[in-house]
Length: 328
Image (tube, rainbow, N blue to C red; front, side, top):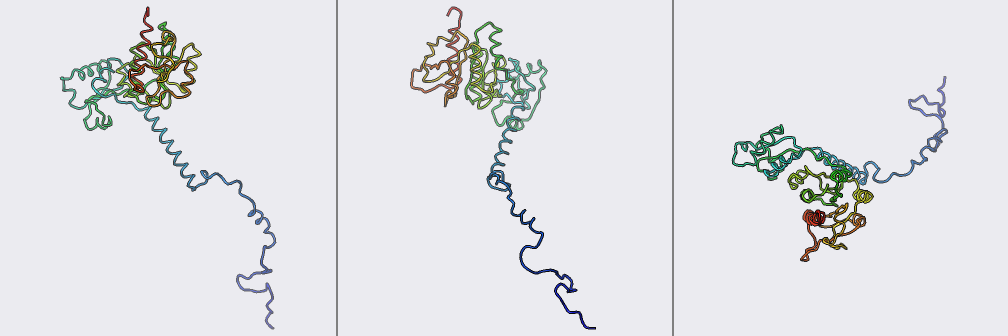
């Protein structure tokens, strides 16, 4: 019996192929080709493409914003230390809110300084915890600032509502006198303004929530306890709040070197008044300046361009207080 002749597709070898060896697409592959030809949609922006340099930059910026927000939140929630013998004893005398009194180990034995002794007694009367710490530890806690061996821990400041300032004036049956700060970022200036406002009969201080100094321990220290007696309010939008005060019957005057009215000639001093003080460098912002009913200048004997916010507020409030005296 002869061997069976080999024919195409008749091989018994492993891996044999059948059918045509003709190049090109075979039957039934049209679907795959259509899918391969289908588009993938619009190309996303560079900052949304995984691995793209723009996407990495955007992600890094988002992380930085998140880190800054968390840092601000921690700063707002963390108690602060009011440092120094004079500031601590003045704060305790003024009954400002406090949670503990820190004294460097060995300082309690020094009876030579009456301020420390009085601080210990005042804290004990209020039932505040007395915590002794080593100098190195307290240096770290105070960030290297001068502490004179004593510090008062104060909780985050509780801001008033802007309407509370009007209500404080109404309770005293007096025309409102409010000091508003525009972009004043130095807490020492804020503390000085609070102190002057309390001393010259203002009913409160208004600050913006953003781009402004807050009532930190440094502001507490500069206010010399006045912040415990005078409300400080925050406004989400300073311009909008100034307009709300205008709707409530207040006149709004801003301090400006090129003001149209000289401070001694201000005839609005004895009525409901809001005094706006700008930063030393830039003064009032454009929108705040346009919102003011009058711009007032402080007459100067020299060519000195401007006073810092604390001094300018003090001079202005003193002048206004003279106009508000009975019989003035």
